[in-house]
Image (cartoon, rainbow over all chains, first blue to last red; front, top):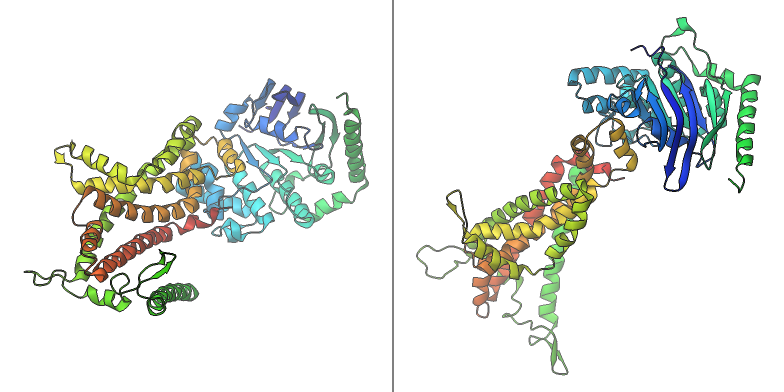
Amino acid sequence: MTGTGTAAVELQGVDKAFGSVRALAGVDLTIDAGEFVSLIGPSGCGKSTLLRVVADLEEPTAGSVAVAGTSARQARLDQRYGIAFQQAGLLDWRTVAENVELPLQVHGVGKAERRRRAAELLELVGLTEFAGSRPAELSGGMQQRVAIARALAPSPRLLLMDEPFGALDEMTRERMQAELLRIAGETGAAVLFVTHSIPEAVVLSDRVVVMSPRPGRITEIIAGRRPPVAADDLVPDSLDPEAVEDVRETGAFFEAVTAVREALRKGAATDGPAG
Amino acid sequence: MGSRGGRRLRAAAWALAGFALLVALWELAKLVLPAGGVTLGGTRVLPRTDDAAMPHVWTVLARLGVPEVAGAAEPRSVAAAIASSALFTLGLALGGLVLGGIAGMLLAVLMQRFAVAEKAVLPYVIASQTVPLIAIAPLVAGWGGKIAIAGWAWQPWASVMVISSYLAFFPISVGMLRGLTSPRRADVEMFRSLAAGWWTTLLRLRLPASVPYLVPAVRLAAAAAVVGAIVAEISTGTRGGIGRLIIEYAQSATGDPSQMYAAILGAAVLGLVAAGAVGLLELGLRRYRGSVA
């Protein structure tokens, strides 16, 4: 169950239509174990739909979806992935710790084990002292960190994130990106990350998948600039925000940003009235 | 804690002030308006204000301490008569509230679970409240008279409880349905992504989310249950409750109006007590209160 050898996600010829609208057309994409892949594209290009297909929240009209070597449905039933949306979506009547425990509670994990795991995860996202707080008492960034901890609760090898930092201010957003990179490095989980932001996609990802709308399809895949985490450096705070800041100021970062921007423009240009 | 206690005290003070204002208005009307009422072109537009129609507030209060029937073998004060019958009715109303609450919640869960059920049942839930209670009460009493459950013969008070629950279930089923469907789409999908079944989603998401809708619905239902119980007592002729007492006192109202007003006062206090009981429920569920987005 190390995940090596088996791809985290394998999509082949995935189509998705809502009535007469083709949201996705012929999407092929493989995400390796531990890989960080961003989906970027204009609104309506189907990037969220693609993530929802992987999560088995939508069924593809055609094509095959494999998650951790099994069907998307089985992967969902086995809690092989964790998911986080743009809205943290925490339950107001539960404490922060109880929110993190939710996935474990749903799957019948005992109370003591749940407590232990929640404490561990809250330490990972740096919110130990807020375990007993209510979500409403936390800032937006902190709530999103709780949502990430919750997504990580069943120790998934795959994280699905749909614009998780979309509602945060720029400063908080950059801090959260560094945080996410550290967590992804520490847990070794693969990440499928939907975003609108080009710099965000570039700084986080091993690969940036550029999509175009009507019908939603992959137009280009560009190498991202995810900062490497040294193998002997896998301790908390191994990836401090400054390492991420450094990446943001390199020439390679700007080159990748430019490449993604041009790919998006090209995708938009081919999206003529003839469709 | 201190500030909350202070707020409670202030709320109570305002409620008392409201009562005082009502008393003052009543007495002012008696003082200012002519005893025969106000007539315009042969039509009376304001009621009589003489002591037979509008007794003084203090006469009503004084009446509470007077024996119900002068010269009876076991003299019972009006206050005692009202209190004991109000308690009897309160018990039936609370029973009706519980019965109606269970029925209303089950209906709401059914309607949430099956869209077809909502389409098929909701119109009748609404229609049920437009049928006059007076028409239903004798029917229920009539059916009840023919029923014996496990050797237990149907009692008239059971009819009153059922009729009271008929009024109470409505706000609860409608409020509960709104609450059960209140979770955001993202929350429902979160549970789906966790492979949570319908029951787990109900227990961990929909029920907690419905509490902020349920509490005001139960408060409405408690008031409705009291009204239902009183009307049911009157229309089924059930003895022992305040509904019957009001009718008895009303029959002698021309000679002794203050006694009937005392009984009406008792019914009003009864409603307040029922609503207060809901306050206790709210206190127990306060963890779930702030969840209306």
